[in-house]
Image 1: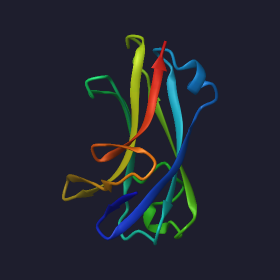
Image 2: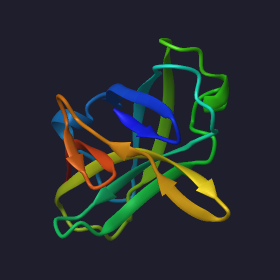
Image 3: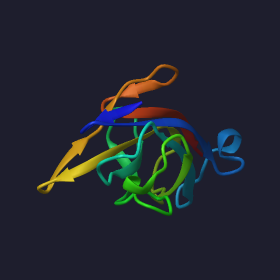
Length: 140
């Protein structure tokens, strides 16, 4: 669950493009993933979502921020309890060495130009800073 500013939004799941879980991705490809969000109540704030691919030391290798999420409507229009899909596409650098990379996702709001991440709590997933770890992706 992501919480902040009086709002609570759950990441109920995610999916990767077909074959990625088994075959990984190649340098120069794009990694596509869909996040499934669910607001507990209609959010008061319009949040941005993000997805990042990190190397073993935790450095960002690829990322996509969706300023109003990758959904068809801003979070302030999300009906409580409905699952909303949010798609992101990460460009994998052409010179990226083969290996395992961590995929993370989260949400934030901009407050006077300052990023304010929603706080993360995980019951079934793994917390990674202010984000949730979606697991590992193999670059081959």
